[in-house]
Length: 75
Image 1 (tube, rainbow, N blue to C red):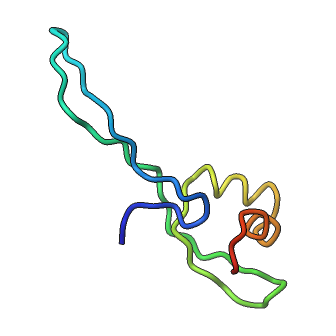
Image 2 (cartoon, one colour; image 1 turned 180 degrees about the horizontal axis):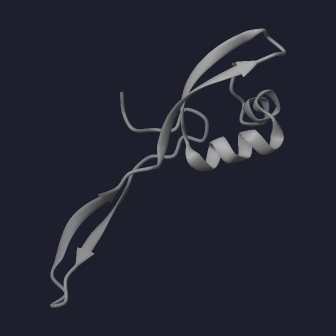
Image 3 (cartoon, rainbow, N blue to C red; image 1 turned 120 degrees about the vertical axis):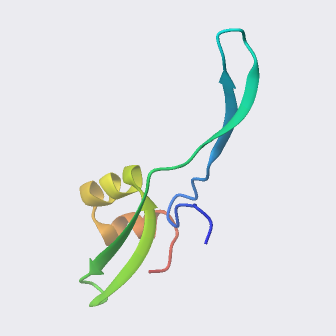
């Protein structure tokens, strides 16, 4: 599966490595993905999500069910 956050949709970013002489070579920056099992007490079940560390922090702050609902995800 691709390295994409299932909640926010964040993907890799492409840019350049720039040397001291200003030669440019392509590079990629991968998102900080974490595979996490999250328990949803409202539905009495556990879902496994691949999400970014930023999405996980926001989910901890707002609550899993509320955050997934806000993002438009049917969990």
